[in-house]
Image (cartoon, rainbow, N blue to C red):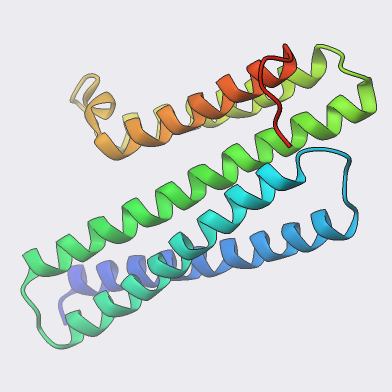
Length: 180
């Protein structure tokens, strides 16, 4: 196995480990949420976390398949398709977790602050920090190509999903829509 293949294999194993860690985090959070039920937000948060669960399972499974296929000497273009599938699966799962945390944090603060504006500012700040990190990551990942990182379908889908989550939170805050 060449040095490049070894690095690629280690990267795939790292993604499998990260997906496994995310599953553990999700199960822990769901257990805590259900054990110490807040007044609101538990249904939406649980729904989003449980929808992300199979996406992380899929990411782990696909990463295992990639490692197996590499051992079999499978063509690189075939492995790259599976790698993209794992990336999309993990990214969408992670995005659903981010939206769930934003909604849950918002609902908890709504309880503790009786609806003060800080409740609305928390999810906005939380997702803004994530977007800044994503932009920096993308800029570092694609050096020398100005604004290429805005052309990534997967990242645009994730950002739009998080934006929709923020819109729902805003609608809930102004009593136009209720997140349960």
